[in-house]
Length: 339
Ligand code: NAD
Ligand code: DAU
Picture 1: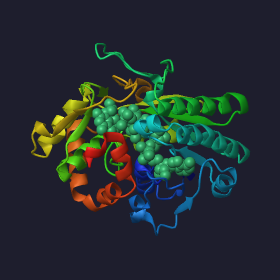
Picture 2: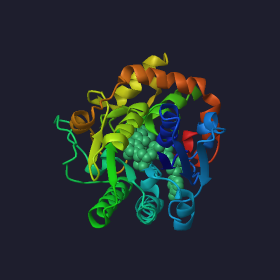
Picture 3: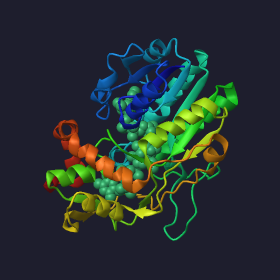
C-alpha cells in the first residue's frame, strides 16, 4: 500500500505511522500535516531516515497542496483535525474549517485521484451522551446527537464522507472510536494533563463533580483496529472501536494515577464544569469483533501504568510543549492562578 496519512504528526497519527512502518515495512507512507500546535515531528524521529517515509507540510484545506502530496498514493487515512473539545468551546471556527471543510477538500482530491480507499477516523462523541444510570452503549446504529462544536464538526465530516460514497462511489470506511490514551498524547488531554501536572507538583483540574465517564482505548489497540478495517473492512461501512474498561469516572481515573505515582488525593482540584459536558461514553464493539476479529488487547490498569511510566521517562518531550504556546492556552482555560 501507498498510504497518505493526514495529521500524522499528532498523537494518534504518529502512533499509527510508527505502528504501520513496523508491521508493514514494505509499504510507503506520506505524512501530510500542517503542524498546528498539536503537530510534533519529534514523535517520528525514529523513522526520519526511512526511505519509505516522507513528511509533507501542508494544510488539508488547500486542494493544491493536497493534490501534489497525494499523487502516487492509493490509500488515505484521515486523522487531521482540531481535536480538543475545550478549545472548540473557546473558538469553534478552526474546527469547522479543518474538520468539515478540510475533509471535503480531501474527499474531492481523493475522488479525482482515483484513491482505492479513503479511511476516515472519527469519534464516539458524534453520538452525544449516555445516562450514568444506564448501561447502554453506542453502536454503529446509534443516532447522531453531537453537543460540542468539536463533536458537531466531526459529525459533519462523517456525513460528508458517507455522502461521497453514496453519491460518487468513493470507496470509504469510517471508524468511530472512544478516548485514546498512551504515549505521545498532547498534555492538554485529561490523562497526560493529570500525569504531567503531578510531576510538576500542580493540582489536577477535575471538571464538575468528576463523575463523567469515558471509554478508554489504548492507542495501539486503535491502530490495530484501523489496520483490520483497511485490510478487510467492507467499503461504505462504519465500525465502532472501544476499550476494555468497565465504566470508570474521571475522578477514579485520577485516583488510579495518583496511586500509581505515590501521591494523595489532596492534589485533586474540582473546577468549573465544561459547558455542555457529555456525561458518559461507552462503546459496543461487537461489529468489528464479529466481522473483522478485532478486540482490544490492553487492560486499562496495565496500560495506564505504562503510560505513566512513559511520561515520567519523556519529560523533555512534554516539558517543551508545556513551556511553549500551550502555556497561554492553559491560563485561558483554567484561569490566571493556574500556572
Ligand atoms: P491531535 O490534535 O493530537 O493531532 C491532530 C493532528 O492534525 C496534528 O498533527 C495537527 O498538526 C494536524 N492538523 C490539524 N489541522 C490540520 C490541517 N488543517 N491540515 C493538516 N493537518 C492538520 O489529534 P489526535 O488526538 O491524534 O486525533 C486524531 C484524530 O482522531 C482526529 O480526527 C480526532 O477527531 C480523532 N479521534 C481522537 C480521539 C482521541 O481520544 N484523541 C478519539 C476519537 C477520535
Ligand atoms: O471520545 C473521543 C474523544 O475523546 C475524542 O474525539 C477527542 O478528540 C478527545 O479529545 C477526547 O475528548 P474528551 O473531551 O472526552 O477528552 P478530554 O481528555 O478533554 O477529557 C476527558 C474527560 O476528562 C472529560 O469528561 C472532561 C474531563 N476533564 C478534561 C480536562 C482536560 C477534566 O475533568 N479536566 C480537565 O482538565
